[in-house]
Image 1 (cartoon, each protein chain N blue to C red):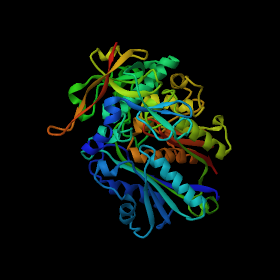
Image 2: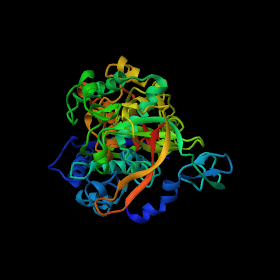
Image 3: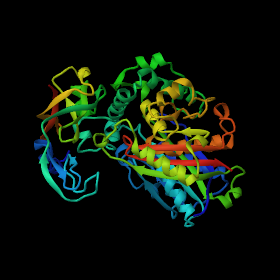
Image 4: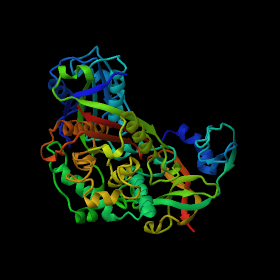
Length: 129
Length: 382
């Protein structure tokens, strides 16, 4: 991923910055100018709590090239207490134990590397409680 | 709007076609369609293609394909909606003819996936790059999450998922154009290697090369080109949340439901009026969710429909008589047109061993990404 593109995403990837719609209260992650629920364009910046519950999950056995060394690994859609949902890798556990309902914390981790000489790309991964 | 008919079709075999380039595939399918209608000109060409740019480094497919068909000068453009590109190309061609702007239009779909590209990475570009692909999710992974949500919500089982693959391979075994012309057993499916749990290799459509093309004209001119035209009764398209995480119910495909509702309304039919259907079974769970979202079966009953024979050849509503994406193959941009051709042939009584008796109304549903776009067409024997 080219570095300028990565740099733009830092606020939400590093700090879990999100937006709360002033119309209906829906929390969007990453932040959005237009609320996908009610269409309102007024919003306030907020942060996601660094924990949540697995909505659905899988264990990836055939990974993209960049994740070859990590397979098999668990991926999950996690819902935070704010009602926002995000796609994350679930680590530090047996991947087969990650199931809908599993409680997790969101931790700041290395996500991927831009090849051998590129930047290191960070974000959040989930760890079962 | 004018009534529109399909009058001819052409399609390559689907598979690993190492000897053919992207343009070779298009020309083969297009020439077959043109010769079927005994015509040597068209007013426009729509080329459905997901990612010529990433698969073979070739963009700008409209003029390239027109040129190699010996038709430089004709209006031609590419239509893209990931794996729904073919269906969306058909929809664009339909409106071109229906509006009165053009009389004879070729709707094609093509993809060359076996040319050395990192297929998993290319396909992942149909997911949300910033919030999904970045974290290492793959397309089988996204559909595996849909499957797990469906299992959680409705009690769908591994046997249900396997039943879809078994059924579609049984159909594909009868299709000379299919990539995998062989049956599989439920045991083989459930013992195949894991790709993204709970999905296994034999739940997944393959990596394929292929092209397909159909020729459209106003219904009142159709008899100039064929004795057995097929009318396009309705078209419906819709979008849904791009990222799976943004869907309130990950086991329900909103875009499919919306697109089907629009197509049914335009066609003036109910789901129960359909005699034969091709739906987007890129993974076994997709057929289950799509048939539910289209109201072909009740919610949560998609797996049972495959197990009970309801959606098999000889059943009440045969689904994916071509073998589906699973067995016929899935050259992503070609799929929507290939589905259309299966229904075209079914309604003309040309499907041989796969023929559904007395098929009058058929439909084709084509989907992009993890269900973020969907397009449905309803067809009628004239």
